[in-house]
Length: 260
Image 1 (cartoon, one colour):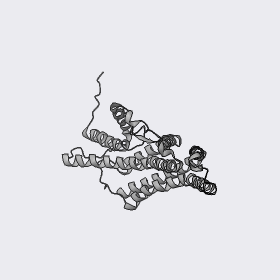
Image 2 (cartoon, rainbow, N blue to C red; image 1 turned 120 degrees about the horizontal axis):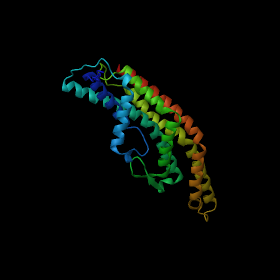
Image 3 (spheres, rainbow, N blue to C red; image 1 turned 30 degrees about the vertical axis):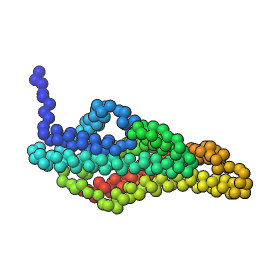
Image 4 (spheres, rainbow, N blue to C red; image 1 turned 90 degrees about the vertical axis):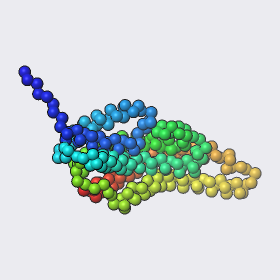
């Protein structure tokens, strides 16, 4: 029987390359726990497999004979768009980490450090726990499915090799950065307020009876109280994180719409 050879044309090769560049740019900023310890071949295989899985959304009308300059511009543009998407998603984890850092400074956990699984550097105990918690919430709330759907939408709206401009409204980018601090304050302010009231109470007691060194004696209790309040606010953390994720994907939609 005659065998039919599989023909892979220039359009298919260029489509694979450009979609891979967009995915690789996105993965470079995604807050994946332990990503630094993953072997490079595993990252490459993951990017290639996801790119092949998105074969139905590869661009069909791409120019099969681009000049080297045009091809280079395409690659940089796709990588920049992917990094923009990954950076916007990483802001979600950074907001939770910033909230934990604010609580840790007020509760006294800045004296204790742990190993950050992403950077292998010494970091505070609470920020490391919050970073891992944010990564778990990302998958528990199904945001990875929304991210893949958003990526497919960008392939349909902004096809690789198509005529679209790589620009975004400044107010949208500022809103993404401001959302980090807003979410962090929403998470940290209740804990900080309670710890501040505790500090004022201990200071007044120490003023009344100067023989008692309450601030140094109650330091372990303050750390335990801060950890307990932060743990009790975990259900609210999921709600705030989900609402912040919804705003992030909305801003991503505005960015993609402005590039058309």
